Image (cartoon, rainbow, N blue to C red):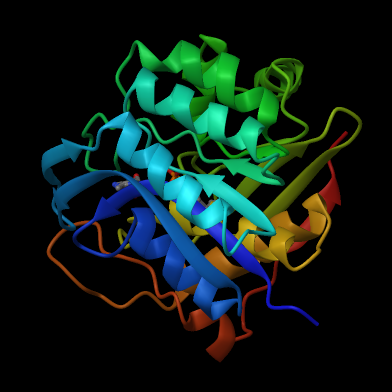
Length: 275
Ligand SMILES: Nc1ncnc2c1ncn2[C@@H]1O[C@H](COP(=O)(O)OP(=O)(O)OP(=O)(O)O)[C@@H](O)[C@H]1O
Ligand SMILES: Cc1ncc(COP(=O)(O)O)c(N)n1
């Protein structure tokens, strides 16, 4: 069997809990060979983002060229992409090399409240990147921005999932980390079926990088040949273990534990049809 390979195109988090660092740790734990194309360097820790240094679109393009022309990949994901020129060059490279399957984590705002995507780039995310993706993984505020309305009921969230799939992506998971309730439930829709992926909500503020880790785990699972629904189940299990066994690092929103998935098996995930 050949070694599964995955590429992450995202920003660097100096604190190591989110971004490229979370993605590579996740790929590694799932026994997938990880590669990266950096879009930006952030000075960041568990308390917040102090600075963002964006790379030139050309620099992002060259990194993708280097990986695609030699090692290749079985799946890829995008994370923080702050501007339209970078978004467009990534889409161009994905089309040029026919890179797939693609998971898009539409990172917009950090847990600490810092904007990571220019407002003008939102349209470009919807029109250039989403149609190339097999899965998009917005959190609740990101889903609200994608469809332009408040999603305060399950009916509205389902309607939003339909609208997001109509944007050209094959499937969507609207993550439930920002909802209340004793279950953390993520709503999946692939144009045919709605599924609810649920786990008990863990009372913790160590949730920095949960979205990055979730989408990276789904990407790694796809690289290993899992179907999209199997990959979402793997991602949900991986992140639940990571939150349940978080490391207690930092003075703010701490990182999750990226090795918990391989060490523990005490979290029960339910996958049920949502009618
Ligand atoms: N307290 C929690 N307990 C259990 N699961 C959680 C908790 N918080 C988030 N999750 C799960 O973690 C995953 C990521 O969800 P979340 O909504 O936090 O993403 P996010 O806001 O994009 O993350 P981030 O912006 O920190 O990268 C989802 O599967 C969600 O259900
Ligand atoms: C480089 C980078 N990418 C993504 C996030 C989102 O993660 P979070 O919402 O947990 O801050 C981040 N903070 N930094």
